[in-house]
Image (cartoon, rainbow, N blue to C red; front, side, top):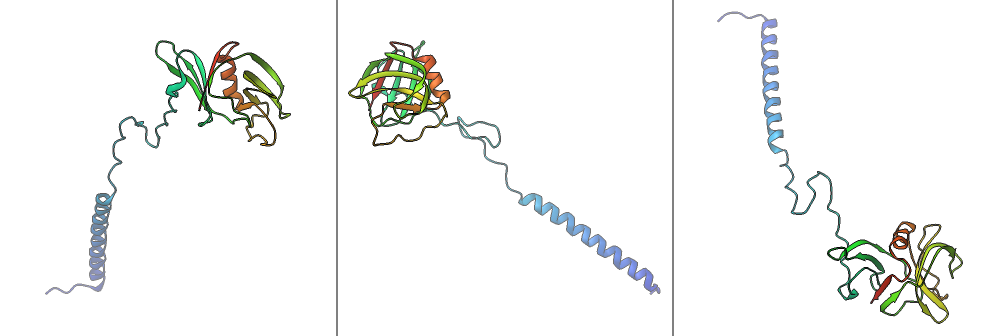
Length: 187
């Protein structure tokens, strides 16, 4: 057997150890790659294909008992308004939530009888886009927006008829519902 110097043995052992570490590293990397999670499942039908996006919820359908034709529909239970235009097929131009007043109109069909660009509401707040459609003893009922764009619950001790929405929503209603436009109130 040939005599090998101690430097040669150490170098050989070092090279062998480095080769073993490299082999283990390659093997570990390969294992890590195989253990990675599978790609996400394809989006469900109707969902957006963009990663990270969520499908938008569909707005509630116009209440079936709200009649036909061009109209504003106000649901007392849902606290929601629909602007409906039957151009071709009945469709919702816009729908939005509202804050009801302390006095509700009775379900039925009404006509817009007054519009005021800006005034002070029966609750003392500055309001705009006022569209009135019902008269009750001691108050009138209609849609409006507070100029400060808030929609707090009305004081239950006051008799108010202002159905409030955001400035943006009430501007759309103002543009949609002129004098004599039909407003249908459903339960």
